[in-house]
Length: 190
Image 1 (cartoon, rainbow, N blue to C red):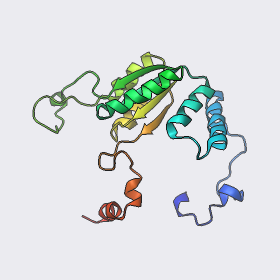
Image 2 (cartoon, rainbow, N blue to C red):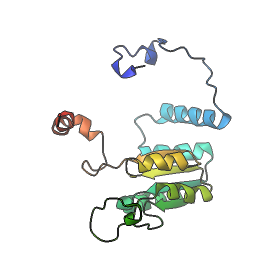
Image 3 (cartoon, helix red, strand yellow):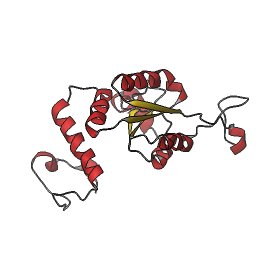
Image 4 (tube, one colour):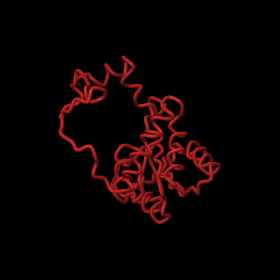
């Protein structure tokens, strides 16, 4: 499939079938609940709620009680705000910062940003810590590319992304697709 090349997007409104599929998705009960809850929130709050509000509403409707936050140390203030929001909405909040365990990069012979001690990011440990707390949902705030992948792989709870790290564009990666300067530079052959 190369859906990104489609000209008519007939699957959206016209019911065009490009890939045969049954009308009843064969999902486990919990995953079907996630799908239905997401669809209800989309219907009720489309263009009315921010992403953080949608995550709060989704969590309430799913009956989640324990929220985990896996965050980059560079977004410490934002993680505190998110934790405060969820706490005030009645959730029990746990968090795990990326530098958890403070393992020096020298141990793995990893490149450093500066001289001296520098801790590696530890997304597997972040997932382990939140797994031990039996979180119902984990929220990712600014984990690096690759670290976010490892966190999601090892997280036992479903996870969603609130903030995607983009140090150049104030954590708004879609800005690169809508800014001619950045887009030209990205598309250049080097």
